[in-house]
Amino acid sequence: MRALLGRLDVWLFALALLAGAGALGYLSTRYAVMSDWTAGGRASLSPESRAVLAALDGPVEIVSYANPQGDLRQTIAGFIERYRRLKPDLTLRFVDPEQDPAKMRALGITVDGAIIVHYRGREQRLDELSERSLTNALVRLTRSGERIVAFVTGDGERRADGQANADLGTFMAQLESRGMRAVPLNFAQVTAVPEHTDLVVLASPTLPLAPGAVRALVDYLGNGGNLLWLTEPADSDLNLEPLADALGLRVLPGVLVDGGGAALGLKDPRLIALGAYPAHAITRGFVLTTLFPQVAALAQVNRNDWAVQPFLASGPQSWTEFQPIDNAASSTIRYDAAAGELKGPLDFGLALTRLSPSPDKSQQRVAVIGDGDFLSNTFLGNGGNRALGERVFDWLLGDDALVSLPPRGAPDRVLTISQTELNVLSLGFLLGLPLLLGIGGALVWRRRRR
Image (cartoon, rainbow, N blue to C red; front, side):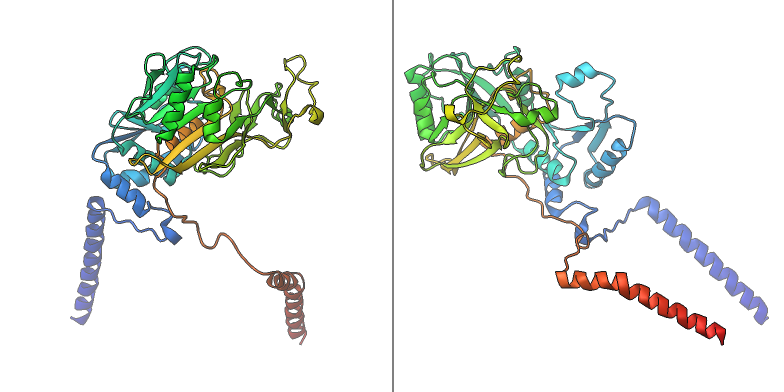
């Protein structure tokens, strides 16, 4: 009888165990429980990103232009899955960029794995695959209101809607999908910058501006307006000295050339390629290479209430060349200090800020860049030109005040020890450990001999 009861207990225990396992299996199909045990929660989204996702009240579509070969699609899908778990209506779609190369060029997509985020008819591109980049892109998309960007016209400037090689039509078409609207500003028709203008762009004029136009730009600065000034070499006869004086800047004579470009395969020394940038909010975390065809160096000549910071600078092998350059003579140019040429590094992108005179704004911002070709239809697709241009516009419009994510690296990735500790470890591995192994081997040998 006891044996029978014992067997019954075993069978009952087995049935209970199977029933429990089946219940757990059923519950696992209905409910998902996840736990992140990594240091700093590196495998899950930060509270800041969760708050941004909670503020999105509509579907989000993420399109990745990644080649199906390789592991890139799998990497992107694994990263986006973190966001999709918290927002089920966030979808990811892959497009093979090799299926329609012409369309890819029209969209300005030149990098395998490029990602575009769509939300409520607007879009944002990612510079990198990171939580900071994607979360900040979502923040920009949630900001309502159209930004008015006025382009000065009538003096041979680059057209915001033009399709010529030197115009900015392709770039501005992409910015319009991000909530910016370009409007013409002709001072032959108006005497001042209209109200509710968020940004004025003076894009490489080729004809002298009328005194009234220059006075209107200076007054616009005096009232707290934000300005992007794209200047070029030999722009000294455009009547823009009052504008430069208001900013405390000068466009240096000559064209900036860089002897280090030959190592990158650039035959024309006037092509300035950058892969490193001075520290600034515009270039923070920016690692893409940019190309500038013909550059004018800039300099701050007097101190005023503007705080000036460079964000674009040439390399140590650069200088301001005064002699005319053509492709045939590009290999014979030399730095000539006696002629007044200046040796690099030289700044050609300056960001200016000050306390805004307007009571409606806290800070006034101006960016001056010694080249406008890098955003033109011809050169926009080179490296990170488009991405840098978007960063410049975002900063000028105040869209750089985004989510600041804390660093969440593994605490054991870096070992910090003193020189004394390093010496002790070295002696231990080189002398101590072999000595202990030898003593242990001798003791074992002696014991076996006995």
